[in-house]
Amino acid sequence: MGLLPHRIARLGIALVPETRGVFSYLTARENLEIARRPGSRWPLESVLERFRSSVKCLIARADSLGR
Image 1: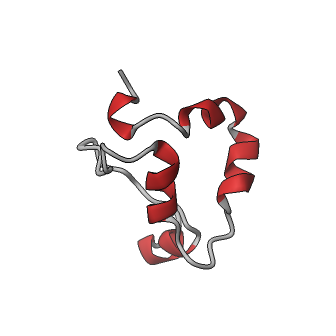
Image 2 (image 1 turned 120 degrees about the vertical axis):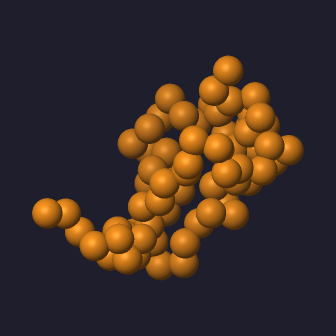
């Protein structure tokens, strides 16, 4: 059995439903900033180090991603 949902949320892990609950007119970086959780142990810079190929997507508008 895994962690309880509230414990997962405290770790800063979230699910974006298939409906793409993002602001399409903002960039990917701006959407990540809005979703940032205080006290998360995964600061954006740390995540981007692990997923270097995603860095180039940060300046793209959210509605242009995944096409």
